[in-house]
Length: 316
Image (tube, rainbow, N blue to C red; front, side, top):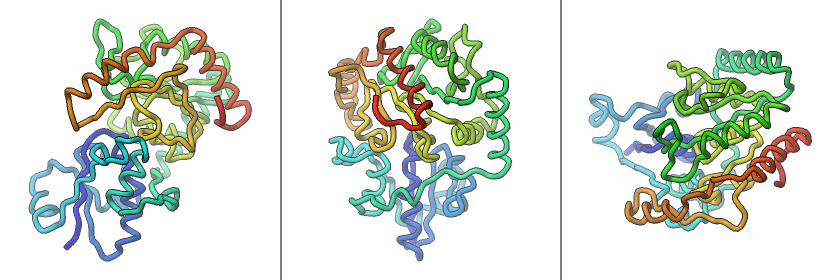
């Protein structure tokens, strides 16, 4: 009996599952498996192993085609004990759930996002034009807001405490723009109203693919715990993540990125999808973990510039 994998949740989860799914293909060559995604199927485009196996979940006939006579597997890392105890990250959790492998030594061989020639050419041309226009040698992609943000009274509100506020975002942009060109990654409605410094990736039908391609051509990624970090990791881009209400030990890649966290703070774990009451309690405890001082903003900007000057992302 062939297998059908059902992926739900946000873009970061989908991207983080790709290495384990590619690995499954090579470990199980006789399984004509399929992948159903609730959204974000564009992360599988141009993937030579997985694109033809991936389908949108909410399509008429999918039950008869892909589920009824298959073994349905819905991997859920948030329910996995090693994940919620900060012993494995998302990608490793998917590997253990899907492949039963607890070593993960070979994951680096799998899971890179793929681009076609048009997307590659678009990104190269766009980033080079930006460098020429801004008279800068380096490009930084900056994602200041997580997927759970809301806009209230023109202020960004994130109850998961993963995002910075608009004032902090603009302060960082102004300081960094003296040294690098900046691409803003996020919704147009959340962008700082006075931000005429950074470059915005337009909301068009190919926005996500253009974003993936642009990150593949950038020199550095600066962001919060959201989809951008998974894309940057896929293309081996150095970066700095601003950590608030989530723990880098399970939501990110501790052997790749560097992290900024307010001194002497660690978040209360948020049991997403497990217990809403405990999640609400943890989010309240974590409130303010990304309220940054001017000194901390300067430290973050100096770290990014030093990394770019040195050509690495080690140490903060």
